[in-house]
Length: 281
Image (tube, rainbow, N blue to C red; front, side, top):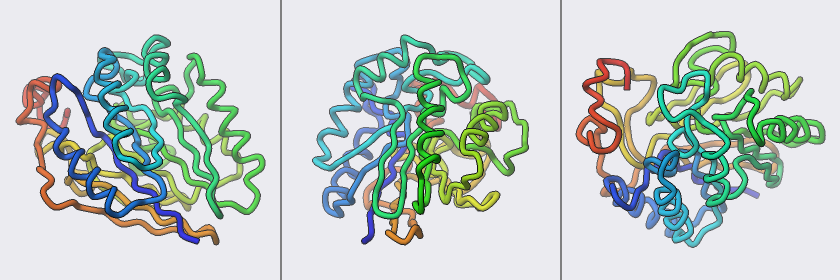
């Protein structure tokens, strides 16, 4: 039995700044045609949900309109950024509660044949915030009775760039302290897959026995030289196929008619990325 999961990410929806809604609607139409078993958004559902509840509500309504089963996880533009790297809008209790009031739990576990899917809030990993301790317990419980299942973890930010030992002070990646706490909670279990979004690029790498797959954004890319190239700069989504024997495959999906928006052309969204300097977006 094959379970197909469409991983979309970084939809950046807003009723007042609907720059990227048309791309979402085109992908939604494609998903209704292909009818995956589950749609999973790995964060940045809203353009500025950290400060504007209306953006979260818009994103919730857009996902409800899919007519498909879906789950979501928060991104930094939904609940604020991790305290290790926050330039502005740090994650806090009020922002977390606002997200949960619209979308429900910010971490969860879901079993499908042969697999356990673990959805985590990347922005509270290792922090002393409401729900963070519960999330760590969720991880420990998930691996304690994993049995013969394979484990897939979904979260917003990549767990690292190249190695688990790296110590990069970058808001693109999970920082070393929270990463090491997550790995400690996993114990001897090696996830088969860790899937994320956030960087607005597609990438597929193998690190320490785990496939790390980055989904591109549905909304926009960030052109050179404002953002380094880690993988493929594109818009679209990733379809995962999970098999009952614990194996899996995936493919990058492009949808006809998607516009490859460049964030540098939309200063109304987050400011002028060109003013941040090369490599800083």
